[in-house]
Every structure is written in structure tokens, then in C-alpha cells.
Image 1 (spheres, rainbow, N blue to C red):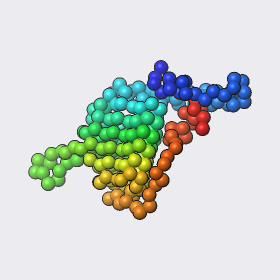
Image 2: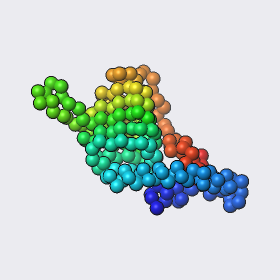
Image 3: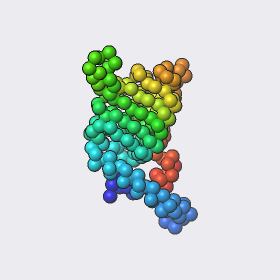
Image 4: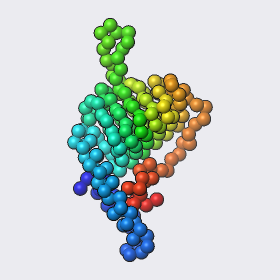
Length: 199
């Protein structure tokens, strides 16, 4: 049994047996079992490729270019839809991070001033509770701070500070900041996991 399934079983919501809440939770668990097994199959394939995954992380369609050992994803992250990551250098994603469909994380680039057009690579770090919205591009060497938001379609060429909001191409930091205290887990919003863990 995978670590996610063990985690869900050990931390499952336990309403009184045969109560309406018990019947409802088990009906939802059966209904979403197929999706849960598919999610665990995707997880197992990534782990077999060397990717390090924290517990309760939901992975959509993750396309990797480079060695899986260069990727670490923390606990309770939601990587939704198709996300592409170039692993020419390490990528470290913290806990409870959301990365939406169409995001590209690039650790390598070619030096256009180099006559040999050599590639350079630099690691990327995305801290806890960050949210990288649909279609954003993160370029080599960037750090996305704790709780920071990268807006849809933004192209991030420089670090985004903790709790900052970055938008546009190239990304610029808005005056507005995100809240600094969090108490949510993005995977608990997904029906597959909510069926086991409750609200």
C-alpha cells in the first residue's frame, strides 16, 4: 500500500459507525476510489523515477525533462493539470503549494551572448503556501517566497519575496500583499481526499 493510502487510512475521519455521516463518508470513498488509485499510480511512477514526494501530494500530469532525483515536492501540494519541469538543476517545492495547469518551470537556458550557445542551469525554489497560477513561467535561479502568488501567465525572471504577488511579463511585484497566516491544505479541497479527511 502506498504512503498516501496509509496516511489516509491512519488519518481518516471516523464518524460513528452506521450513522448518516459514516454512510455518507464511505459512499464518497467508494465513489472516488478509482480516482484515488489513479493518483497513487502516478505518484508511484514518479517515485520510481527518483522524485521525492511528501505525503498527501496530488500530482496531475507532470512532464519532467531531466533526472527525477533533482525534484523534491513537499507535503499536501496540489499540482493541477499539465505542468512541465526542466530538471537541469534541482527544483525544491515546499509544503502546501499549488501549481496550476500550463505552468513551466525552467532550470536551464542558453546564453545568447556565448558564441558556443552553451546552456547554463540554476536551481529553483518554491516555498510553502506559494501559488503559481495557470500558464506562468518560472525561469532559472528564481525563488518564489513563502505564501507568494505568481499570477496567470506571468514570466518570473527574479525572486518573488514572501507573501508578494507577481504579475505580468516580465513579472512585477504589486503593492498589494497576501495574508501572512495560513490554515489550509489545498488537497483537502479535492473530493478524492476530502472523502477521507473531511473538512
